[in-house]
Amino acid sequence: MGFLDKVPRLEALIERLESAEGLEDLQNVIEELRDSFGVDHMIYHWVNSKGDQYGCGTYDLEWVNRYVQKGYLRVDPVIVGCFQRFHPVDWKRFDWSSKAARAFMQDAIEHGVGNQGYSIPIRGPNGQFAHFTLSHNCNDEDWQTFTDKNRRDLILISHSFNQKALEFQPGRTPESSQSLSPREIEAMTLLATGLSRAQAADQLSISEHTLRVYVESARHKLGALNTTHAVARALNRGLIVI
Image (cartoon, rainbow, N blue to C red; front, side, top):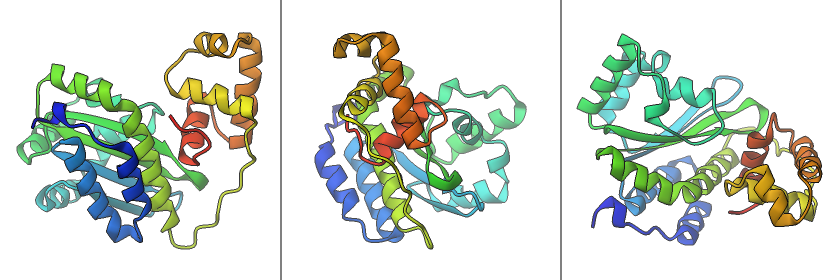
């Protein structure tokens, strides 16, 4: 069975993730997620406001050590690109124009990373930044089909993964948040599914101005920088489900 034929059971995957009991267990979970989606690799990496890092994934240890030794963090377009975005993004949309970036990609491919990639940036509490990444070796058409098919599930899994990892962060203090109203939840859920503001307003039978009021109220309650950030936080905290 090829990776395009895989049909992961989202409910079972989330249940397995929620059963993780420590950071070490997340390594087992991410290997199971990789196999469920049928891709070559899956990676999760976080950095908090103090610069502390944690990562787990399925890259070969030789590549992980080489990445660190070569200082690739400074030239990796995936890291730079994810830090500048909130939406999931295909690696082809990053800036690979520099000589250093192209050399890095060639080295990565030679170490089994794959010629395709898809990353989901995550903004957590207290300045935490993370990304959830998949990579695979296939043609552009198959990769586009795969990411289109699995985008929503991957977004939900990535934020659930981050939420679980945060539970194990030493000295973590719970982040307080106000609850969203039913209308705010409806508005945010529709936007999370990819609808435009006009489409979401039409679905709710309200004006775009009224929708904007709901969205801005939700954004303020969530302490988000913009609408996309608010959607990500609402997903991360389980306030909305898509």
